[in-house]
Length: 212
Image (cartoon, rainbow, N blue to C red):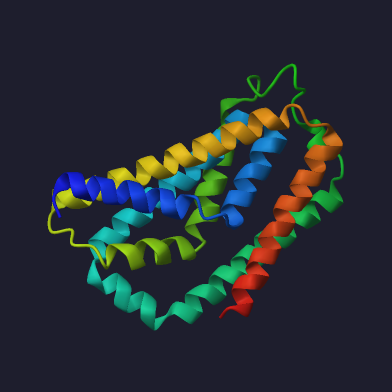
């Protein structure tokens, strides 16, 4: 596989993984609707950053990735199910304890342009953490890269670049669209979206646990 082929493969793999609607996608959408497009974009870039890190790790691990993942597939899925369930339940509990939370989002006329940079940085770091502790991401990249013939540093860099670019573009498009749509939602609808997003995380965790 030469460099252009590796770049193209990275783009395909990156978009294929990013477009799988899972717990993290649900949380990115919920954040964008509730907090606005800039906060959503920060969340999406946090996810893409971890995708780049995991793609890099999978490329470096090579064939060892497939062997390791095959040997511990059940354990990885169990950890992922537990983590996602905790994240979803905690989010629902937070909404129950603080019913007015969503109503403190910026008014549509203000958008989120007045939100401090620190708040968006916090969203970025939050989603870096959420994506990093979800082991399914490394499973996806490890399974794919183990089947590819990346025979040099240049090919590996091209693959990671393609995967990262695809992930970033997808998550930015998703979060910006949801964020701008959310500006037209009433606080009641925003809250309903928050509940639905966090409930979706719990349901995904249950489905994953059943499949173990």
